[in-house]
Length: 144
Image (tube, rainbow, N blue to C red):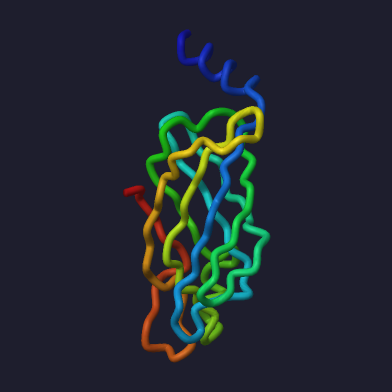
């Protein structure tokens, strides 16, 4: 009974927002033109997979806003990867060197809550341009 009440409360909740600061590494071929998705997981649920609509170039930091339904609670992990997963891995040099992602929760007044949650990665997602370094199409990141 109590579980259903909590589900109903969550379903009626308005949108919440997270500002993401995504930093790409500084090695040859570190950027990507492939579609990347992100999924946040917290104590109260998941954001679902969301495509990131930004340019992920070498040695750059970009910002985007992620809208989620309801309060995710304390963030526990993040999954990030290529939208087309295994298909992208077949393309030589399509990899992306993700350095880190900083997440900032945004309050109802669209003001950033000051303390970021940092998800370090410092790994390749997919294969590097030279083929000497590679990772899977999906990485699971944990906060510092």
